[in-house]
Length: 195
Ligand code: ATP
Ligand code: MG
Image 1 (cartoon, protein in one colour):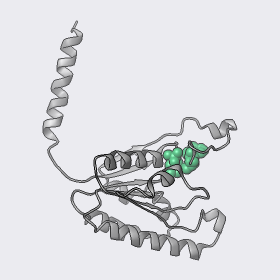
Image 2 (image 1 turned 120 degrees about the vertical axis):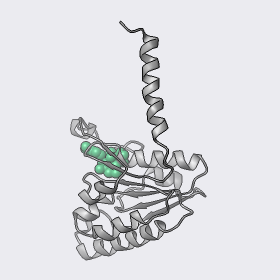
Image 3 (image 1 turned 180 degrees about the horizontal axis):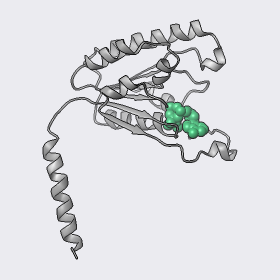
């Protein structure tokens, strides 16, 4: 039987070989999807990581919740972060499709501008996937802009269901599965956890 030390040495060899192979230096497109809790908070956590290293970040939120999130309150005035909330509320609240489309187009215009701006190291397009689901935005121009962005720019997109075209061009895709949620146990949404 192999000793612990032998197994660890073998593991290190495998990992070192993988590290030696990963030599490309470029920005990545990360998709955070699935029905489980943790997509937006993971994106904002990664943004905090980047900003901590002195990087510049921007957020475009594609659906304005009723409540301001803790992340928005914490980050909106940060000198390295620009935060745009563009929307007129959740669809099922406004029930005004024209207004929603207009808001989506405005948000996309801002996102497109950020995708051409080399001074941003990381961009978060929060809840963007719904724009395609509800057909508020066309996918093709979004794919084109993502592919033409500055080489070192990282982009994270969140939303429960991602369109296929977006998955095709993504570098990292994490799917967060809903195994259980306190809401279904009757626990009320709470500040600091849900928003
Ligand atoms: P978070 O913002 O906590 O990271 P998320 O971005 O993964 O969550 P969304 O689909 O954007 O989740 O939903 C936003 C809100 O709904 C959050 O308040 C979140 O806590 C809550 N939520 C997320 N998943 C579930 C679920 N499976 N059941 C009930 N509520 C959920
Ligand atoms: Mg979210």
